[in-house]
Length: 220
Length: 74
Image 1 (cartoon, chains in turn yellow, green):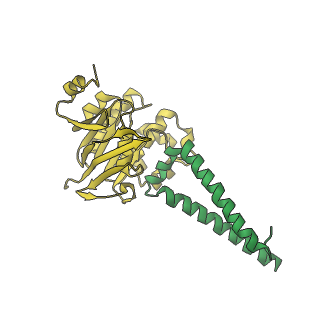
Image 2 (cartoon, chains in turn purple, green):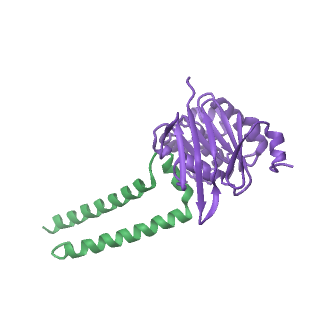
Image 3 (cartoon, helix red, strand yellow):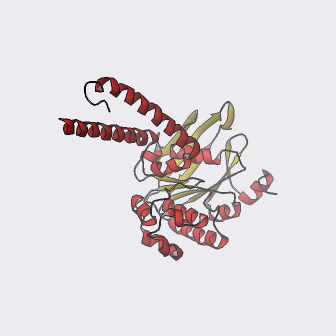
């Protein structure tokens, strides 16, 4: 399989004169997991939404294999995004959602057999943790080349985080995965490349993540 | 409902009212439930297309209903 790339470059974002992002470069590749770390309010979610194409900044350039695309989410089979908050309509059934997103439910329960009982249940019947897990899998198993995951480990119990990490490692063979999460150890364990967002809105590609995170004040 | 000779007066007012109320719904949903829109973006549907198609379906359903009433009165 040839490697596909998705790059975010020259991201510039301001809200009411307050600079959020000003010098961002980020590269995703199929077959690799890219980690995105940063303190609260540094603009991680904004980067993901700008890469997805639903947030417009003062300037941005998203390139697929070197070609500029203005709204990546409108390109069929290119990218899907897991937002921080629940996004699936609560009245739709789990199986219906899988069909709409062209996700194989059998593959989902192959990874997480505990979801089997919810096949014909509406999303509102799932607990908070199971909703988060289901939505994360819905995006991860989508037939797209790139997935952007914003805090996929939030509300998920540790044993499932471990299982989900295994799924991500398995699925990276087929797609490029970007993970942004405060659970930085999980992100570091999974990532082939790690970027840190530092004030004000600059991205750094870390060569020695553990020591650089400490020296840059992200960890103590 | 004025579906007969006063319909040409009623229709523009109805459309203005629909545009205003739909704009209010759009504003409210963006403010309260912005993350829900990602369900549609992940399916490759833009926000503008989503609201314009909902608006168009609404208007078409209304006009079909008016036509049905007119045929009943004919």
